[in-house]
Amino acid sequence: MNPRIGAAEPELAQALGLPLDTQSDFVLEHANGRLQLRDTREGAPGPIYVDFGSHDAARRRDAGRQLPLARAVGVKGDARPFVLDATAGLGRDACTLAALGCRVIAVERSPVIAALLRDGLERAGSALELVTGDACEYMAALADADRPDVVYLDPMFPERRKSAAVKKEMQYMQELLGADDADALFAAAMSCAGKRVVVKRPVHAPELAPPNHKIEGKTVRFDVYVV
Ligand SMILES: C[S@@+](CC[C@H](N)C(=O)[O-])C[C@H]1O[C@@H](n2cnc3c(N)ncnc32)[C@H](O)[C@@H]1O
Image (cartoon, rainbow, N blue to C red):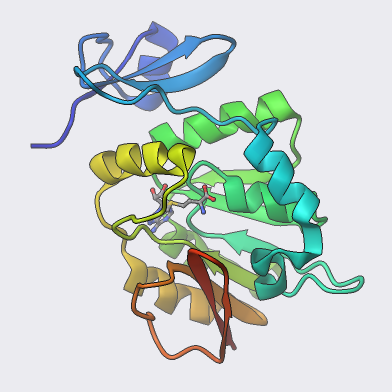
């Protein structure tokens, strides 16, 4: 059975079409100066929210152009590609790329996840552009002049990563969102990107298609498809 999601405040309930219900499995609420999603069930991990001021976010920004993510999208010398992040999630990768100087448009299909991300962006004063909606539809409707250089995909995959923060987020996301439409996203991305499509995968995960090259990190791999 799908988990029940409720909102703790009438404005949130109305904006996101959620029941006003603090007894739901997951509750979206403002607390501690942020918007957060809390699993109310016994033994659940703490709430998830977006925090671009965290140690993890700072570490990723400081690693800069050396990051496998930056190399995969083509950040090099003065080159700062225009990136469409078609699976924004809680915006870690999109914000890292924006902090490196790329123009980034992030698309997120889940209105609840998008609301958490929008709240984090507002608190951080980020210029990242966020679109709530289905990225396949968004890409199909783009005019030629608006196409990005790079489409970046990080579809969900059963998780083995160890970082506590990522583990908690993944636990929430996999229960709330289920499997991603990775193949449809990949097909839409290949028709939309001006230069390349980059797919992030856990190191052990199969490729969506044979890539032109791969950049391997410790736990994740970036498959690069030149279009
Ligand atoms: C693994 S998470 C992405 C994590 C993200 N890279 C980060 O750094 O935080 C995958 C996200 O893609 C979203 N997603 C899946 N299919 C989508 C689609 N067709 N359009 C937009 N978002 C989609 C899911 O709702 C989920 O939030």
